[in-house]
Image 1 (cartoon, rainbow, N blue to C red):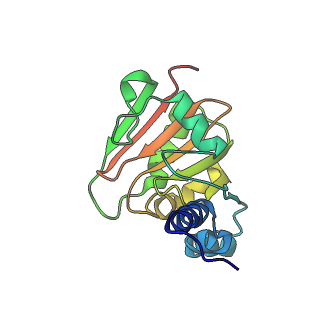
Image 2: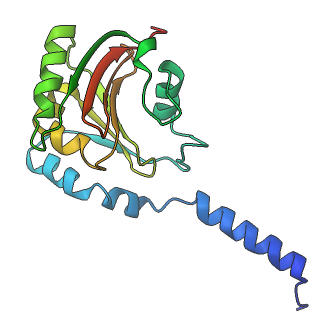
Length: 179
């Protein structure tokens, strides 16, 4: 076997790096949410999780992430620009023990939302997506939205609405401007 040239070694290292960046360890990703999934299981709450082959903000392949980015306008920092949404309800809460479920319940009643299956997408794009019925989410909402201590979006693709939890404490609900 002949020895590789420095150029060939560099190409092989680059190819190996690219493979490592795009391969997803399903068990590791699911394990990142295991405490939450255990709580849902213990409470008998049905859910589904979705893991996509490549999940990065720059190159999304997750259809839910793509849907969200196509139906809501985002600021460069990753927050939805609510000026382009309709029927926006807002709450700013800085207390640590805020009940996010109560906000979701109030929004649900005010907007007349039924009990759709919603998608939960976290700012950490290497996290699995969670599919759960809205009413089942309410009792565990605080646990769900604070999984990353960052940002989280709960949305219904059929009715084109989204609830955004921003790490600064803002909770917002609104319909897509393109609805």
